[in-house]
Image (cartoon, rainbow, N blue to C red):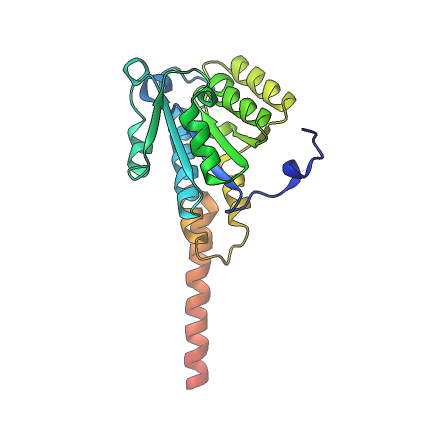
Length: 218
């Protein structure tokens, strides 16, 4: 797939995207070294909540929970209505149930996050590309066991055509319009600092409008 292919340049939308969460497990989080754990949890939970608000399908997989532990509780709480797929394969794309679940959505834009970045994220993202999907790797909602491993994983993914993205920009690209009814829920989910300012401005203009109406009525 070339960088100029239509599949790469087509925007992410509510109708063509899905989110694949790979191995966000308690045991694996203990080894993350390239990003602060609290920041990582903030980003992955925020991204997931935003996708759910936008009604984008979410597919969740864990690997060998007896070895690496359960899904982190912060994410499990958000995904209480979403069934996870536990597997033993290193590459999530080698598990037929996951591939079948992705294909069943009918969507071709795969937003992927995983622990670790260079394996649990990179392997399925690249494998999906080979199967005709366009993969977007959410770097700041993933984590690795050293900065070098993460850097090499990103380089390898880019060479395969995977697009590196941030947790907030994919959600906002899908939102597309700040007048959409889900906008407030999306910005709230992402926990972006300026969303509080936007809410304050909304209240301000609402109060100004009421005062103007009162003045006209008088």
